[in-house]
Image (tube, rainbow, N blue to C red; front, side, top):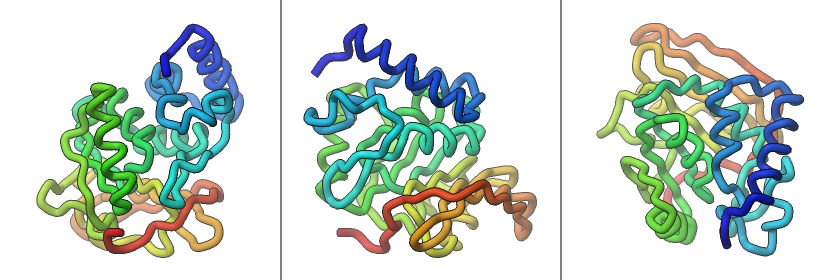
Length: 213
């Protein structure tokens, strides 16, 4: 599969949709405009890759809707060279957006099938996260903490304490919290023990599961 002028045109239209939905961060919009989302999907979905929809990617997981990816990325407020932890590598599309924003990305995936597949894909495509880890996202990555930002791409029934603990002062955790439906929640670390919490509308994600599979 190639990235053609037609694909680029479809991405431009997708960006127009995201702007209409309220995404305003130019760096995020530019990442969506640049990254060939169709290559992250099964080829049977290629014609639909630039619709603002989620799609299955195997192991009962999905590639998030582009609006959700853009919304979470915007909330994270990534600056170049920020150290970002991503919980739930999935197809790698959100990882690619973070890399395009200039982040140093550490990403954890608990599904072995996806971990292997996405790792091969990153190498083939020249995407270079700092680390792709097969592990339990609930535990975070204490050996690389603290992080400027942590992004969770699955619905968490509660906020894992290790993730809050692994944020820098001033760092942001973007996490969808809830069981059947999730509230997009941002925690900003104000001091060693103090966090500011913001809630920003409801979403539906696949569940964040514990342990490796």
